[in-house]
Image 1 (cartoon, rainbow, N blue to C red):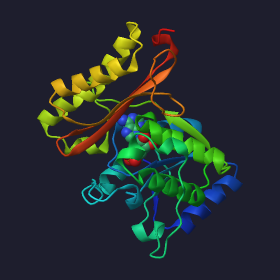
Image 2: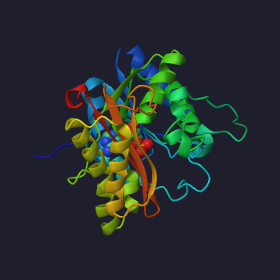
Image 3: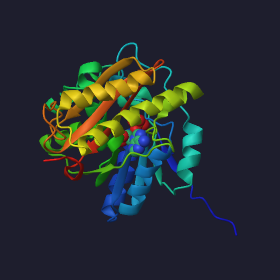
Image 4: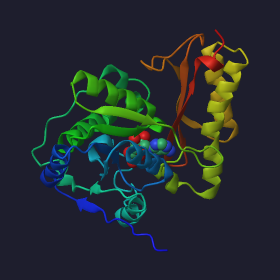
Length: 293
Ligand code: AMP
């Protein structure tokens, strides 16, 4: 039996994308948006599957957004694999891919940016100044170009989900936000397009990010409620693995991302560290069921 793979419509221009989505909406179709920077992996594909389940039509965007990279970050070397990405998406019957060129998203005279909410300030915001300004700006632009009913994001980028939810609320955007679980490699490493940069030994070393989160959960389950002690233990797990460039090990309030002193309520553990030249992030919610009150 042959299976027919529906062909994807790949659009590069905002106006044609907008017209296509408007026409779908007029015909009563629900539209799901999955924004990505490409180099697709199972994490991205889980968002696509969620969109396929919930919406009539799925639009995946592939755009390596320059404004969310800082100077010295990996904007130039970021993997760009459009052909392979399209082959993967074809297997999921995705109807539309929006793959704009840089100047389609940012005209030379572009000078308007979204001022991100307070929750963008700690953690990633502190170590990647301007990152969430770029993220919020591009997400708002994509939502304007593609007026979807629902947009799908990954828990892997937890702070990003808080920034986007807040922006959607504050700017009265008519879109529902869904956050999908983090998809991991067999050893627990969170899937990321940046994992491609890792050599086999570095990939092994990178498991320590997940292990330090699990250690935090284990300590909290065991009754440890001093957040400083748990943060130090997380660092120790990273140090044992030879990871010495750690941006943060955080135990924070899951809504505000302000650091906690005492772990007597739901919290989220977050980590950002460098493995070789690759910067990785991960997180794990410590829910009431595993927090001793
Ligand atoms: P990116 O291409 O890295 O900008 O990611 C696009 C979307 O995929 C974002 O909403 C990410 O949070 C999400 N994502 C990336 N990695 C994963 C993962 N391992 N599991 C689930 N979602 C992910």
